[in-house]
Length: 127
Ligand SMILES: Cc1cc2nc3c(=O)[nH]c(=O)nc-3n(C[C@H](O)[C@H](O)[C@H](O)COP(=O)(O)O)c2cc1C
Image (cartoon, rainbow, N blue to C red; front, side, top):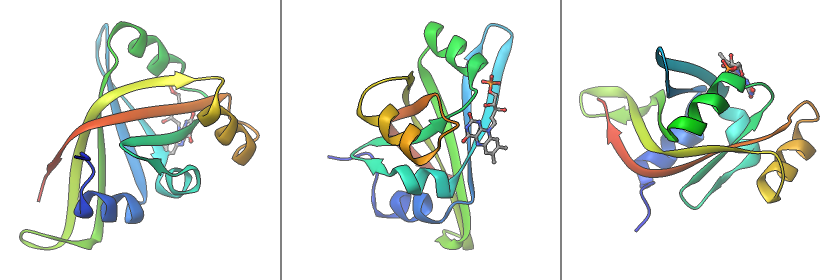
């Protein structure tokens, strides 16, 4: 069964941006990406595919610990208390500089050096 259910899919379709957290040697490290970039590259099964232009520190962190958390949210998705929902997606990530996803990222974003690929294994709603 997919970790990405109907509500999570709606959030991925509507979120303006994503915040992705890795674990650094000196504590958490947060980076961003745009929801429309995610939608351009697509969600492939349980994998989020994002363009990687920089993400050097993120890559270094992932080489030591590939666990990540990603926050997405939208006011236009119904939450448990009213309009607005968000969730944390947990999983493993890597930066791919060649292969199918990297090729897709480089074709859509000429500045990209590859793709940041997050394989989601669990999702937690926040609201
Ligand atoms: C809304 C938003 C979208 C971003 N989109 C990208 C992106 O598509 N690719 C990218 O490499 N960095 C993107 N960044 C910059 C990253 O957050 C980060 O600062 C940069 O990649 C350096 O990463 P590092 O600290 O892991 O080296 C974005 C930042 C924000 C706030």
